Image (cartoon, helix red, strand yellow):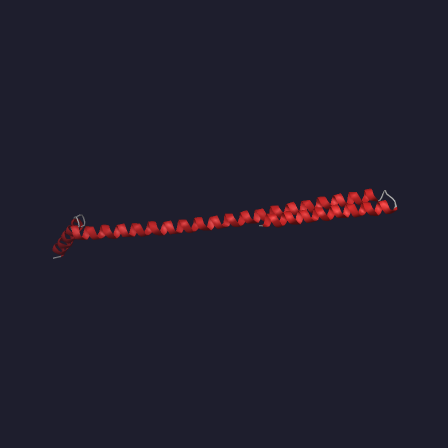
Amino acid sequence: MRIASFSLLTLSLALAATGCNRAASPDVAANDIAEAKQSAAQEVADAQREAEQKIDNAEKAVQAKTGALADTNSKARYDMALAKADGERKIGVQQCMTKDGEAQRHCKEKVDAVYEAARADAKAALAAQSQ
């Protein structure tokens, strides 16, 4: 009896295994193909959306960094212009100290006027670059 049950089980498994290689009916195959196409289209759409989002985020990051770089550059140029104006003022004042009385006063006024003009130019350049 056990041998018959074993043989019957073996035969059932063999038939089940050979049934897996049968072609699907045209209706089932068409349905499976349609589902696969829809799934593939959805995967492509999701990947495209994700890629576009990553590109958009990268572009925003580049724009932010470019803006920060421009601001830093503008501020550095302003600082250099002020440093140059300060240095020229110190030299001018020392040169004025070699003069006496009224000539010294006029010399210092001229140096201060040149200094203030240089500062105003630096501020104007900074404001123009910030726009």
